[in-house]
Length: 178
Length: 201
Image (cartoon, rainbow over all chains, first blue to last red):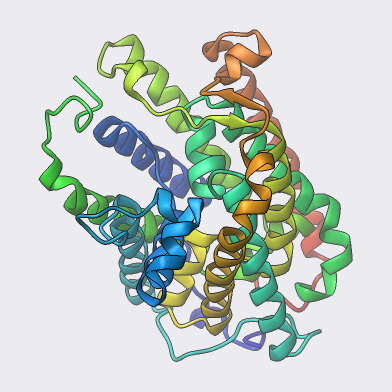
């Protein structure tokens, strides 16, 4: 899809090195203000904990993992990463609107597969990323990017292994992309 | 001086406002760099688009150098900067699982939020998957908690493990980064000639 689009209709992205410098400065600013880096998967974790706690408070109470994130005086949604992730969404919306990429609902996929295949791959990929981010103490933002930048060995390890595994396994999923 | 919030220079009530503003900047940069497209992102694994490597690595290098500089100038108290603890086995397994999820899904959590914002259904499904994955992990936690907490090295830094200073490590990373930027630029040029079903920016 979209392969026939005219050059004039192409999305315009900023220069990746410029984007990288901006992201690096933002990360530095975040560490300077908060003493921690950026994150993303933590917001979904808060959503999971909140959902389970609302449906079955007893169940959440008895599970050590949920229990870690439940507080008596406020909802798990009152969390730094939840507000930051809401910001990620709004920032994406702003940029998308500004650059003309904010369009009707659509699925992006390689012409070699169907939209349905893409959704299955995206769903399974999401499940795996969700599980992996818990074992890894964060995802590509919280562990790999912020961890490495603050010289955490674990963060560096996650960065190398996450991308390394991607390269090792990429061959088997080539059809999904090109 | 910094970090401002841990030292009480900015008080806690501003936490969520700051979180929202930093998040907006984060999301804007991700989307503007092209991370709201899974096919752009996945290009890093097939050589047709190295935007992820360029943005990610540049950001890491800038933040590392900046942090060292802030420390050198005495602008930030490094002891108060959070160092992600290392749980060796758990993090190795987690990274491998995330790597597989990355190649399959084409997003990571942060990028999927920006893709949802511009209307990508596949990103909504990916984020739904995240929710389900974290739920499954939490439900299974009683059985995996021993593994989850095993091999705890604490908040160990790269320099402590590798036995080199943070400054030297940063320098090595900069050199390796420059080589990677140059090498991937060559690879990308070559690969793009053979691919037709993808539009390049």
